[in-house]
Image (cartoon, rainbow, N blue to C red):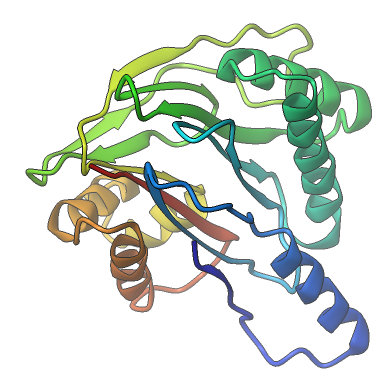
Length: 246
């Protein structure tokens, strides 16, 4: 997997440089797994951001992916994001793999530690053996899946962001994913930037990029980034793309 971090401006201070390094270091690391091809990209609006990307292989055939987006920008959002990232690591350590259960634990964490903040999140468990994706959302934009034929399906359901209501129960959806399909998670900073026309919702515009883009995960991330170059950034932007290999 390629890990990339872009800085919006030349960093003027040692502190800003340290923050940028922290953000870059928080990008997901991924050990080789023949069943999946993965690429990720993140660009904060400030030297450090509030988006969280996590990629965790559970074994050779199962992959846990997550993308969370903390309200706000900068250092305050990054502090909450660090707690969410630590919570995701703790879930892995405790053997918690069900996406809904992971969101419920993260909801308790945010409610207890940062009651003035909320976090949207998407968590998925992709099984290459069964070709199924089990996913759960917490107020996050729809998960997008591009089929080998180029069709793009949007998957969403009503759910509350993390940190709003203690004890919230999250639901899961199981989706059949064909070989050579692409699963794409993203923060709303990406979809909002593509909504340059009021009549074209950001998710619709992003789905069109996926429809016309290449099959590979790195190629798709590059295609989305090319479209973003024509827009102005107002929020942290992150993309995580996973292709199910043959």
